[in-house]
Length: 177
Ligand code: SF4
Ligand code: SF4
Image (tube, rainbow, N blue to C red):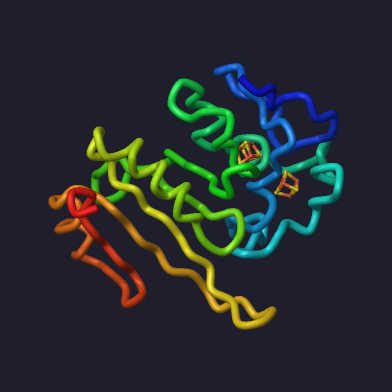
């Protein structure tokens, strides 16, 4: 197994109870996630990110910086080393339910989830019949135009989410893929 904990720079999260560390990953500070309280906008890196990781590491805010843990970090037995977000291009998150479903959210590190990585996560989710929500950021030149939210899930989930879709949303059944 590759050692993903060697890089001697400063990172947003020291480690997890599961014994994995962020290593060289700073994906959650680079625009893949957003947080109103931190003025983190989707598609835009945190103003404090630097070549050596977080520039205000000692005084970084409690939330989300000290508390956020992606699913790769905490679910060591589920997600292999090569799915570390900076390597895969995707931040997997198991943070909250959606329409009473336990869902896996995939936040792209850049604009969209690479197809082969989406396929990997769908293969992971399908036997569990766990819906996969994934996001896509849209740009026109340097101008950020927003994002769309898409989902794959069992037919009953697809029925549930149609309660409140937006125009850009796409919901499909895992069974059809
Ligand atoms: S995306 Fe996950 S592994 Fe990467 S810095 Fe954030 S919490 Fe750590
Ligand atoms: S303050 Fe530091 S840890 Fe928090 S998002 Fe910005 S770079 Fe990341």
